[in-house]
Amino acid sequence: MILLAPTLIDLAPAALAEQVRSRFGSELRRLGVFTQLCHVGAQACLEASPAQGRLGVLLATEHGALTASRSALGEVLRSGEAAMPFAFIATQTSLAGALLARRSHDVARAACLYLGAQDWPWLLRMARSWLAECERVAVGWVEEAAQGEAHRSHWCIFARQAAAPAIHCEPATAGTAATTGDWMARVAAWCDAPGAPLELRGSRQGWRFTSDLRAQGPGRVQSSA
Image (cartoon, rainbow, N blue to C red; front, side, top):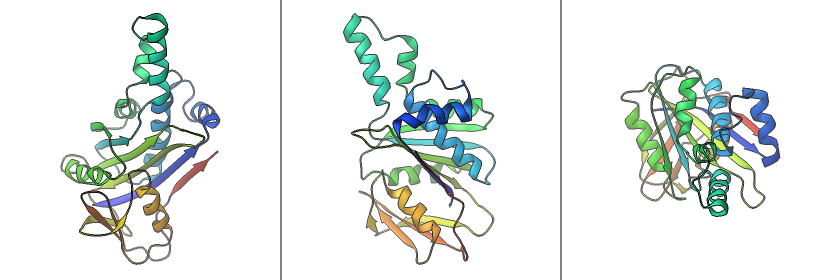
């Protein structure tokens, strides 16, 4: 399979609301930090990718919708009643696919996985299987800011095929240890100046990334505020 458009969105917490307003107006206003962050990264990645056709949306996170979950629990603990509807909706980490479908993307299937630090190869294995029914799969890792860190929304597209030059992905038996949180950033950095194949591994499997690029890597979006 082919990797396209690695897109790394890193935002200071105070910058997210303005980013959402400037890109989407009031459309995402009440949908919670996690869902907003997913949509900012996924939409930027899709806009940077030349691939078209039916879309799978495969999202990974370790901690999920932290802000919304804490808010909803706070409401319950203070009042003793169920969380308000929008507070509950904001805790749902699987909304990204539905939102992208609403924006006229042809979403065939979507899922959100809670993954440990070493389990990122599951994403590539699932993306490869989904390509039997989707022409492209958007794969994302999204984490809300914690302990002074930035919000992170890292995405790429896997496609059945693409016009050369391209980054090819296949299973490998070895590689440098990588995590769910950094494997995509490592691939994106390698894409800027690809040379020898890049091999990364998680807990159960490795993956090899090879390039037929010559002068430069594929387009990459980075944002930091």
